[in-house]
Amino acid sequence: MDFAGLVVLITGASKGIGKCLANILHEYGATVIGVYNSTKIEDMLYDTYKCDISNEDEINNLFAYVKNKHEKIDVVVNCAALCLDNDIYDKTKNEFMRVLEVNLVGTFLMCKYASNYMDRGVIINISSTDAQDTFSTLSMDYAASKAGVENITKNLAQRLPNLKICALAPNWVNTETVLEMEPNYLESELKRIGQDKLIKKEEVAFKIIEIIINDDIRSGEIIRMGGFNE
Image (tube, rainbow, N blue to C red):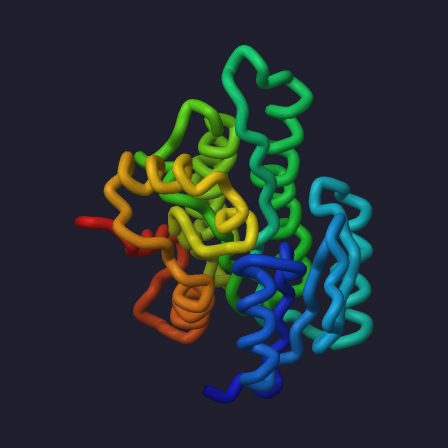
């Protein structure tokens, strides 16, 4: 695949799905802007920018920077997310709101400001099957945020018909964060939801690429990924 000339902005690009996707698209010739917040992108293979996606001013500055430096934006992939798992009686309002601010409001703001700089193109929001049916009581704020992401994806697809706006909903992916989890807990969660193996980061990255290039995938679609006994 040749993505030369394509300008792609990816949030959450310092690790996990975002980093994997950024590296693959860079190898395929795309101009990549990797957005990070608390964890700096170390390898510097492509353009990077520090931005807290829950901060509206920082997002506005991000897109102004990209437009000024690269002149256009073709694709935005919203991978950045936060999960603060704990029991309902330990979960504070501030924790709950922080998860919503990053995962839901941050995704909305990224889409809003991206649309100001995109006459056409693709926006992909990373959701989770937790938004639908694999949620856990420990992460109800995360699941609620991802359900909101899927809803705003459908709404924005109607509001911004010049753009292709989709959401991708995998569940357990072999990201660094997941692999650092307590093995027995992870095994029990996979068993609980009927997922027989972790989805590879590369699989998710190539599914995102498929959404970008496949015209049969329509704006507003929520694409669920495998790893399940379905």
